[in-house]
Image (tube, rainbow, N blue to C red):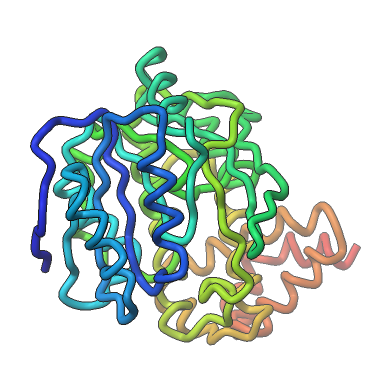
Amino acid sequence: MIKTLQKCESVPKVSVIIPVYNVEKYIKRCIESVLSQTLQDFEIIIVNDYTPDKSMDVIEDYIKNDSRIVSVNNYSNMGLMWTRREGYKIAKGEYFYFLDSDDFIPRDALEKVYNKAVEEDADIVFGNFQYVDNDGTKGKIHKHIFPYGAQKEGIYKAMLSFQLLHCVWSKLYSRRLFDNYKYDTFPHQTNAEDCILTYQLIKNVNKISRIDDAVYYYFDDPTSSSKKRFTNDVVRQYAFSLAYVYNLLKTELVFRAALNRFMAFHISALCYNNYDIEIIKSNIGENTTEVIMGLSSLCKYNRIGKAILYWILWRSNLFRVLIYKLRPVINYIRH
């Protein structure tokens, strides 16, 4: 699937993995931000996801002048998840740092997260990120906090309750986590890749740390494809990712309430936007009934939750199937 163009010979401290697709306008800024780092012991792995523009022409000039840059090609457009995979398959660094090609990083980002990882022997280091708009104006800083502690159980709970983002960028990862990561079991994804990867990696961590600094500039592009309406194929992939998270954690009783609320929120959001309920049901499969039951916890807090429950049941045509199981919930709503 890939062709290696060039490799650096040393063993770097950090491998910066950059997937490339249609970023001709931004890739120079991205690469320059890495080359100017205070920590210079790194490699840059560029993965060309069959980009149709001239991004690779820009990149080739850097490859010719810096042996730390590695370039590989996908022979078809594979999406972020598998494109990142092709990057970390050949990465040689002690740690991995994922950087999207329209984003960039502060000059001391790699030094800060690497030093933290070494000092605390951490498998993952969370850093904050800052929004940047079209004219380069830096905006709000999003802080990654650990409201339930830094153990994996607390991290899962924070992500399930939307208090901690599951994005793979703005974090540093030990390569150990990827040694046993079974990426070949997943179909090609173009959406919700971060969700699958992050939840799987955290399952194998020994130590998680954080720093209270912005180590990533997130380009808030209003024209980004991620902000456009989902196609049925994207909804299918999204539902698959939700089902993956559910199956990964459903046996852990400590997560049950938070997991059901997490699933119910995402399913209701998809249904609210009139996406095909049959696609959602077919990809979540046998978990559909149990997940929708999780909406009962939303109903305890506000009328909107109650309305969502009725509406989802109507949209999914599950009234006859669930009427008995949902009797306690329906009685609660009526009162």
